[in-house]
Each structure stands twice: as structure tokens, then as C-alpha cells.
Image (cartoon, rainbow over all chains, first blue to last red; front, side, top):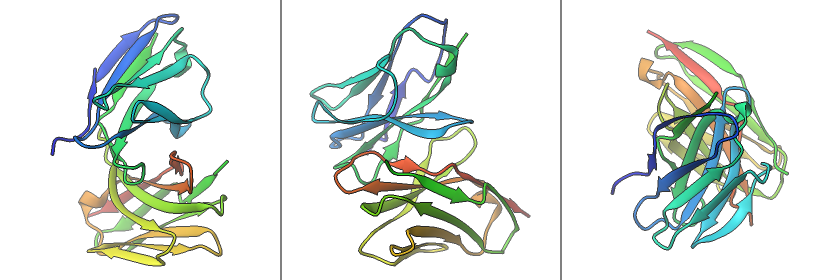
Length: 111
Length: 112
């Protein structure tokens, strides 16, 4: 099976802009979770979607949002970008939320 | 919410030695404990996991032990090799939640 894919792999944005990241899960996986990875904060959970419904949300401001489509692909949106949003954004897919397999990530740099 | 502490933050061993990384968790409802390996510039890879109804699980040179009473779990790597060098993350997930809470990571360096 093909692994989890994420696009784009790299992004450079300016403060105040918005960005949309995409994640395609492993075929058959209906759960997609998003994480933010930074050197200072480690891996932090953003939200999880299952069958187009958000099942869980982490402690991030409302500028961070997401959605999932009927084919299980998921998008994450960050509005009004801040310098502190610079990070590696990882998505992970799983069948039922247990064994999670990560994508390669999108490296977002906010200038 | 869940809190996972991981120690040590860095670990250097000689090739062939064993390495042990320890994690403690706070939520007694946690029932799933995976370990991930992340090489530089790569994605985290699931290397082994354990559920709360099991005390130990082994896969070739790696093993994980779980002590539910003390709320801690450990990763053991035997006969370490240079390719084991990476950052290792532990995580915990509570029943009814979908989010993994990660430890802060351990940078393992295996000296040839």
C-alpha cells in the first residue's frame, strides 16, 4: 500500500497570510490526525478526523482548522499566520485511531 | 489531560551495548503506548507498541515493558547499531480519546 502523502512539502508564507495543507491517508484508513512539531514544543496534537467528522481537538487557537473529505483526504488551514506557526506539520492516518502512520510532513516557514 | 514525561533527553552508547528509554504517564485511563523513531529529516516511524493488557512485547532487538501500577513504560534496544541513531518518542493514548500525547523525545547516538 502507498504510504501517507502530504503536499506541499515546503511552504514559505508571510505573517498575516493563510495556508492550506493537504494529507492523503493510507488507502482504507478513515482516521486522520494532525500534529505540529517544533524543536521547543515537540509533537503536539492539533485535531483528528474520522469519516468527515472532527472527533478530537487539541489546545490550539481557532486560527487552526481542518476538514476531511469523503475519500478520507484531509486539509488543514491556518489563517492569519504568525511567526510562531513556523513548524513541521505532520499528519497521521490509522484505521481506528490506534496505530498511526505519519506522512513526511509539510515544513512551514512564516517570515 | 494526559502528560507524558520521557527520560533521558540524550543517550550515547557504544555499538553493541543496550539502550533504555523511560516514559511515565499521568492518565490512568491510558491504554495504548506506541514508540516512534524519527531519523533526521524523516517522518516518525512506528517501531513498536503495547496495549495495557500486556506487560511486555518484543520484536527482534527492541522490546517495550509496561508497568500500569507505576504508570511507566520503557523501550529497550539490545545490540545497538549505528543505524539505531535517531530521536525516539514515546506516546500514550487514553480510552475514548483519539489523540496521542507524546513525550519530549530522546536523542540516541550509537558510537561505532
